[in-house]
Length: 409
Image (cartoon, rainbow, N blue to C red; front, side, top):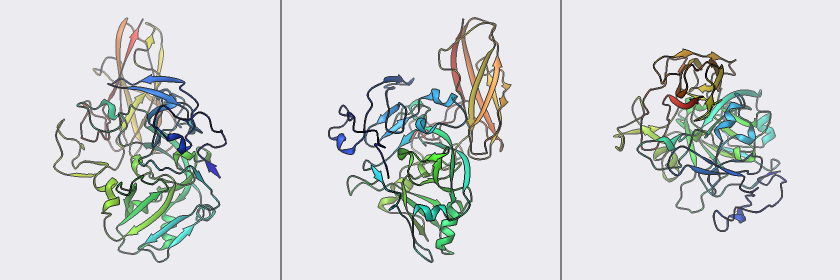
């Protein structure tokens, strides 16, 4: 049995956060430090939850933890203990016994299924896919004007090697109806109040039957960390993390689009303006919206932080990561003069079209003083990062060219 405490013992609880939170069993190792993100009210406490190194605490109940950005310089694969955590509902499971766990499949199918973890693992060949899981609101804190929602820096993302079986194998075992339209997914987290919608997500049947969509139980060579979805997680490569349902327990096949009270996270939340840029004029509302879907192309500098010191006349190796929604990265370019001139970087080995792609470039600063570095990526389908940030009311899908200010001494 895996529990949230994971054998660590009951240490002092998060008594400074929410009265009565100790009943949840969320153990605390103590306030190690704080980190400040570069926007208003950006100071975050670093908290180590079970199976996690100290991460930036966004909220306590439910746990919402962001990865300190320095972790992305450790490699193309994000370590399990550094991986961000995002829940929507406060009643999260605290203990799951794999011996009694079941995945239920129902709806417009020839036969309903109630599958054990072992039965799922025996459903077909095990598949490994390296894929980025990025929160829809990653980088929301940089939105101008400010928008409602968790004020996130750039750390609500991660890249892992996921192992599982294709969702397609389970759906074919159940025998989905010829007129099936969508498939919904629910996990073991539940609302506190009956009036609160459950967190249920839906995929169109065509996407659900894509061979790259996995039911995953393994992450970077280990069983899933509890807070990342143990024992089974829906992995939808190339799509935002809102679809990556944790502690997956129920699948339902529908012959019509998913609607109703519990469709809130499809029909109301996680929607973007229905246009090419998924944007509107700052401070305005879109005329129409659609569910957020694929990741946009992005790139970051990981080897330097703002106000880092470089030495004039000395070679500095600048490194970073890039990714997109599943076509792969064609090139990454770096500018060391604020965007007037661009140089193509060296791409590291590809781990797959859904993965972070590392890049590097050596620069030699020639003048003392402030220096602005910019990085932009181009995907294999020709998508390139925009020079100006777009805006939408949810603060979703930010992918503007990133800039970093350093000092040459």
